[in-house]
Length: 395
Ligand SMILES: O=C(O)CCC(=O)C(=O)O
Image (cartoon, rainbow, N blue to C red; front, side):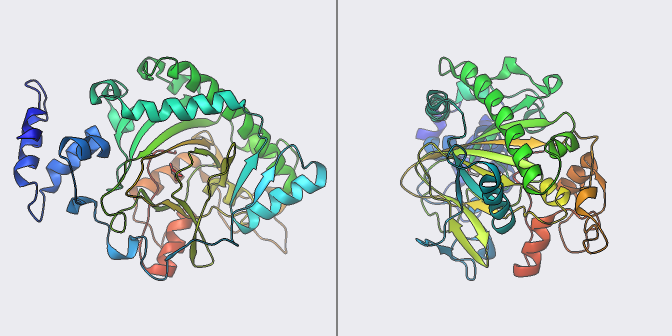
């Protein structure tokens, strides 16, 4: 049997794979085996090793989380698009107003002429998809023993999403494990290093503009985040036999301050606005920027951390590179005093970021939450009576 020949004598998961193979085709796969298989090796390996032609029941989302479930039917809107801001063409008050409008009305925007060298961006995109196309052994080298909770991790994206991920801590230096960063494809490690440092510079530049757009001192948001934690997540979404049943990443908001995303030309990212899911159409040379929960809190709700998700397709793999910029865990995050007065009282309490993150990942989401956190979860619960959590990589 084809799948049995894929197993290796010293492979600790051989028996899991064999059991999975035996039950393949049965209605209900044993979750433990499948979960383990997915977490360790990822969706792409599962699809290729087992020649998966139907979505295993483990990955079938509850009806209210699926792509076409009313009222969250995806809108392929030609009129509605997230704003696109050209950082060279605009300047001064015009640029600040464009940023303010985008952060307030959408929480999402694309940027052009962002200053990252185009050759670097192209290399990053190309080598990222080449990484996922490599044999499993090569990808598995990129996990520390702590796996999901460690500083470098390759595997399934979790949450029963149809996605694989390579996650790397990029800053501060004390949490970076560069010896686990990919050595292949050739040059990828150097590309990632340069890309990550350029992304960090861009994040600082954007946070300064965002501070000014709020009427705050230019360095306010950068200072409020202390020595930032920066994590890169390279997401890979293999083609899915039935994308109407699955989700690449289920609906979530990002718990961090700001996220910068490079996506290829396949498409699949959607943002939630006014009860509709709107496609974020890939634009050549653009980066997608989104407001995270901490920026919503720091801005005292003036700017929105918007729900987003990724839908799968059955034609083509998609790869995206997200850089998450977070406050230091010890930072106390709360509404900027400059945005609070008698007319605009603080709508969130101060909270230590580490506590926010702990609560974000460990407590049930819902309207009884007292931390002022779980912004998206509360919103989803209110609208659809369903909960969400982040993709667990961005803290
Ligand atoms: O792949 C994308 O377009 C979005 C990724 C994302 O939302 C995440 O990594 O949290």
